Image 1 (spheres, helix red, strand yellow):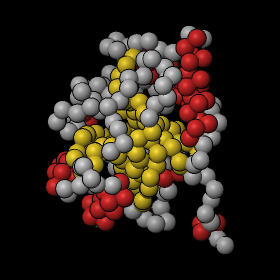
Image 2 (cartoon, rainbow, N blue to C red):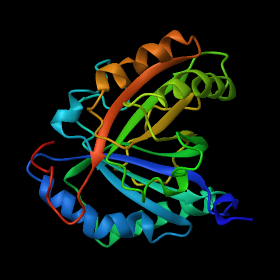
Image 3 (spheres, rainbow, N blue to C red):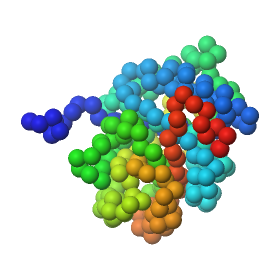
Length: 267
């Protein structure tokens, strides 16, 4: 069997989605703390966490966000920094326990950063992923690939609709069409909510998202602003008109530049 045809055992099972806003005047300090310490000590040193990446929503990109009131970013100017981590399939309980205990330990050691707010930090179960090119980048490599743009799409299932029904509609209709467009994604992963542990750190705001919520990561091979009006600006309407779900939030992000203070003055 050719290597490209192997069903490799490393699979994304759970992903951590953590969107944070540094307090005004602490943007550089926050960025340096997160890159040099927390990116590694908070997640990547844990068991069965095999990839992570950081993204930023600058003022330019925030202008493209959906304008409707939502629980993802009650203040649309917040949620500037996004970090995403992949956990190996079948290890959710072990990883979740380690993360909670580890972050509580970091608090005790004084290694946390008080001058920032958690806007939306939650675990999601990866239900499915799909790539434009069947031989292209898989979701397992998505955070290491260096995609220049990411679009986050969140919605809630309508009453009586199952995730299977919604996923089938979205993948057959919206996604297959988007894959043919220049503005469309190269790779998409979609998850559903895993509730926070009761003893999660107190500074992590308990999100309103519940079992009907889906959250998608659309990885782009171009800057998210390119073709936005033709594509992602219309996704809320498509979701609502499906009759299966209600749109909650759509937001573009771009890659940070590790080891620099780039974009800290543009959020």
